[in-house]
Picture 1 (tube, rainbow, N blue to C red):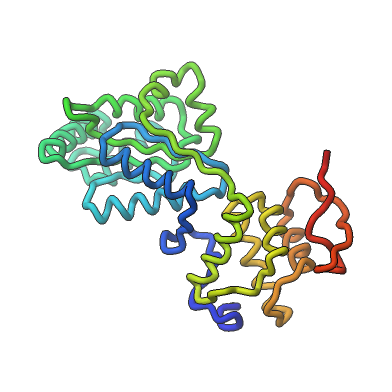
Picture 2 (cartoon, rainbow, N blue to C red):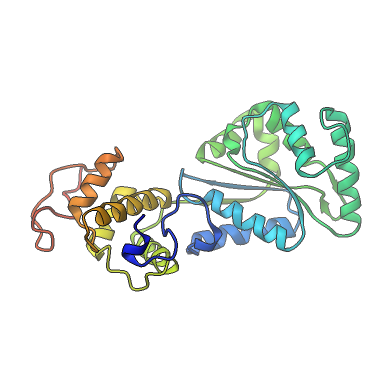
Amino acid sequence: MYKAFFGFTKNPFNMSPDPSFLFRSAQHEEALANLIYGVQSRKGFIVLTGEVGTGKTTMLECLRDFLNAQQIAFASLFNSRLTVEQFFELLAYDLDLRCNRLSKTEVLLSLNNMLIERANVARTTVLIVDEAHNLEWDVLEEIRLLGNLENRKGKLLQIVLAGQQELDRKLDAPEFRQLKQRISLRCALRGFDLGETVAYVNSRMARAGLKGQTVFPPQLLEEIHYRAQGIPRLINAICDNLLLTAFAMESRIATLEMLDEVTADMRLEYPGQLPFRPDADFPQRTLRRSQVP
C-alpha cells in the first residue's frame, strides 16, 4: 500500500522469512556457518535455539537453499505436533521413500537402505525439524534412535533441531541425557544490540529500494530497538506499522507519536513503560525514560 509513496520496490518488513533480506549479523553468520559445517562434516545432531522472532526459521531457509544448491537430499518438518506414526509418514514423504509410508518398519528399512546407498557415494542426507521444542518425548526418542545410523566415516543422517529456548531446557532433563550427549554442535540466537538494530533496519530499507533512509530518525530507531528488545520479528512489525501510519498521515518521516500509537495498537509490552521526560529533539515526548530499578 505504501510502496509507491516511499519509493520501495518491495515490502521492506515482510513478516515471512526471506533469505534475500537476510541481515548478516555476526551471530547469524556464525549460526549459519555452524549449520553448514555440521551437515558437511556429518556431525550428527545440531541444535539451533533462540527467543521467538530472532531468526531461526530464516536460518533454516538459508540452510535449505544451501542444501538445494548442493543437491543434498533433506526432509524438512515444520509441524512438530506429531505422533510417531505421523512423523515417519512425513519423513518418508519428504525423502520420497518407495515403501508403505504408513508402516514404521518399512519406512525404517527403506530409509536405512537409502542412507547407506547415498553414503557409499559420499552423499549426505539431512533431517530438519523446526519448532522442535514442541516434540513429544516418544517422537524425540525416535529421532534420537535415527541418529544411531552410522558407518565408519560418520553419521548417515544429519539431524538439525531448531526451537525456542524451551528446547534447551527439555534437553537438560534427565530422560533426554542420551540425546544431549549426542549433540555435536549448538547454536543460539539472541536479540540485536542497538547497533545491529539500526544496521538491520537500514539494510532492509536499502534492499527494498530506499538507500540512505530518513524515514526513521536515529533517536526513533533507538526507541524502536528498546521497545522491540532487539527482536527482529518485532522490529519488522513495528516498522511496517509505522510506515503504514506515516503513509496514512502523508508524512515521509515517522515520529514518536506514531510509534506510541503503533505499539499501543500492538499491545506491545516492554520494560519501563513510564512517563517520558522532556527532550529537545522531540519536545512533545521523549525517546528515553528513567531506568526502572
